[in-house]
Each structure stands twice: as structure tokens, then as C-alpha cells.
Image (cartoon, rainbow, N blue to C red; front, side):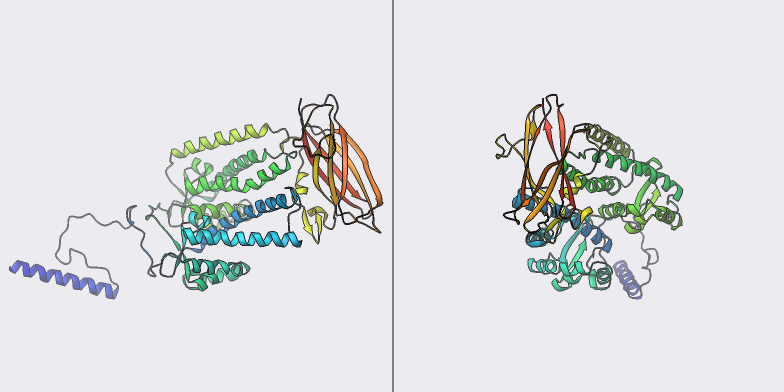
Length: 522
């Protein structure tokens, strides 16, 4: 009984020491000091993968500005593609044409941007209201919550997104100032809606040592050159599919280049934690605290890559204390020496095989950029914009000429032809509407030059002033319809031929060149 009372007194004394230590913020008493003994192993300073990540004192694990920036930029990238795709769809619905001026201004510009504004709101409202996140936030492990950490309600989500345009107007230093200074890094929309953006972790990561293990600047410079060669080879294979005879498909390929660029860096750096050049030298990318990097770091490193490959970026690499490039500073990453993982060797082989396959497929394109006659003329019609009611190319602002509704016709010269495939010796009829020409005293003067390029890009037919329209108009506000007739040579070789149409407005000295393609089959 005496032994039990003595044990109880010892336990009470030990509990009192713990309470005093917590109040005075002093180290906790050890078991040895209190006379207790234990056979348990010493506790590790770094938690293993099974231990949960502790919450900060506020009880809310607020997302870092770095994560929010990466998520926002990724969502903006997706919205940019939705904007371009929406413009093509709008053009097709209204004018039945895809490659025509984008609806920037005027009545159609107002309607299109009103519809896109609604799509912009729904993009965020539906995702945050139903899933409490967006695609960008999902990759960055972020979600929208109320200030108590609970899922945000639909009304709060609606308020934070209705005020998003105001936050976008403050984009730049004012917005970053608000995010940094306001409670829980909230923007104006979050403050009004009572929401926060939280970061989620599955488990505490294992960390690699950083001090004394960072890669040298010279080693990183050599590895960076190797990585640049790999990236150029990857993107170059994609660009091989650009064909000036297929303007719509080529525009889609060029629009996909940033996606392929991001995929390359996100797979290698965000998932595999290294790159081909770094792996060759036994290097690995980690956070500044030695933790593995994820989507946020990989995405920011890819975006800031342009700041790396220049004298400023090289100087930063040599002058920074941890041999970091601008992309490392933006993503808070360092490159350290680490044991090579041989699964990366397999990934390297898969990458080389994939790039080789893309190059082999791309070289089958007879109009690829490696051919001596490759031109990017098809971009003129794609990037034409409407200004002040007139349709213009970026190189020729102030010119109103534009070709629309270019259609190949059947032999009756009125019925649109479903396929643009012809046979040697066959007649080709096509028509188009010319708009934006100058009218003076109800009179117009428009000339057309026509050129046909063979599949090898040599000129097979060229005639200047094939059309010379100079007369008074009954309806000056109506487009001018022009019909052309061509006869293919009897020995025309199979392949894609290109029509080059040049219009000249003689009353205002305006000029416009457009091209379309057709195919000759045996």
C-alpha cells in the first residue's frame, strides 16, 4: 500500500513539472529526472510518412501565396483556351466560318464577351460551389472554405466570384499587398464572402538534407544546357505538324505547344523530381526545406524558365547562396546531390522513344518547317481582328479589306462543293465575298491577283489582275462577290495545292493576301 502511495505521489510531481514547463515554455522534464524508466526508442525529430501534418496555431492551414499564384495562372491558361475555342465556335455559328476575324468589338464583340463573361463566372462558381476547388486549385491541393475551415456555401462562393473582376483590376502589387496583409491572406472577394483558401496535405513528407548538398553552379549550367536540348527536341517534334496548307489544324498545333511544354516540365520536375540533365549528374530538385516538390513548384519553374536561359539567369545561378536560378527562387526550390533512382532511366528511355515517334510522324508532313518553302502566311487570316467595324491584320492596321465565305463550287457555279478534292484536268470554281473596300460616290475599284502553288511550293499558275472590278454599285454596303475559274493541267500531280488570292483596293491603296488549299487525287 505504501508503494502505491509513493507511486501516486511521483506521478503527481511529474504532472506538475509538465504543467510548469508548458507555462514557462521550457523543455519538458525527462523520464530519467522523475525516476521513471522506459525501454522505448528515442523519438525522431522528423515525423515519418504515417504522422499527419500538424496545423498552425490559427487552426487553418492557409494556402501559401505561391500555391495560389500557380493555381490562378493554371486556371487562366485554361480560360485562355476556352476563350479562343469559344471565338471559333461563335464565328462558325454566326458566319459559318472558323478562320475569320475574332469578334473583338462591335455588336458581335459585345455579345461574345458578354457570353464569355458568363462562362468565366460559371467556371469558378460551379467548380468551387460543387467541388470546393477548381482544376488549378485541385492540382495545387487547395480548396475554398469558410473561416472556420468548413466547406463554403453557395452564397459565399457566388459573392467571392462576383467580386473577382475587382480583384483582377487590382492584379499586380495592390493584390499581392492585400493577400499578404489581410487576415488569412484573403482578397477582397474572400473578405466579403468570409472565405479562405486552404492547403491540404496527405502526410508529412520525408526530407533530404540540403545544407552541404546543393549542386554547384557550373554543374547546374551544364545540366541546364542538356535539358534545353531535350525540351527543344520535344517541342520541335510537335511543331513539325504545322502545315501552311492546313491553317486551322496548324493553329491548333501552335496553340497546343504551351501545353506540351508544361507537360514535359510537370512530368519530369513535378512528378519525377528531376530532369534528364540533372539525373545524369546525380541531382534532384527539392524544396528549400528538403521536401519533395509538387505541382506548384513544377508549374512555377516552367513559367519562369524564360528568365533562366539568359545572362541574368546565369549570373543569378552563380551569385545566389544556394546556386538557385530565377525559377528556383520563384518556386522556392534547390537542386541537391541525391542517389540516382533507376526508374528515371526507364522514364528517359520512354521519353526518347516518344520524341522519336513524334519526329518520325512529323517528318511525313510534306509542308513541315524544315522544308525550304515553309511560310507562316496562314497566320494572317487567323489573327485578323476587327477594329472600328473594319477587319484588319496586325501588320496592316487601318486596312479594311477582308475575304470571307470562300467556297469551292460545283460545275453549276452556285452549289457549294462538299469536298475540296479534284482530279487532273478538272475545272475548279470558287467564290468569295470581298468586304471592307473603299466606296467613293457609290463606286468601287477592286483588283484580284491569283497564284497557285504546287505541292512542292513551286508556282504553277500566276495571273495578275485576273479580276478588275471598277464600276458603280447599286448597294454600296453589300459585299462584293467574286467568282474564279481554274483548269487543272491534265498531268497535275497528286497532293495539296495552295490558292494565293491577293486583293487590291485601288481607291485607298489597300492590299490583302489570303490563301486556301485543295487536294488533287489521281
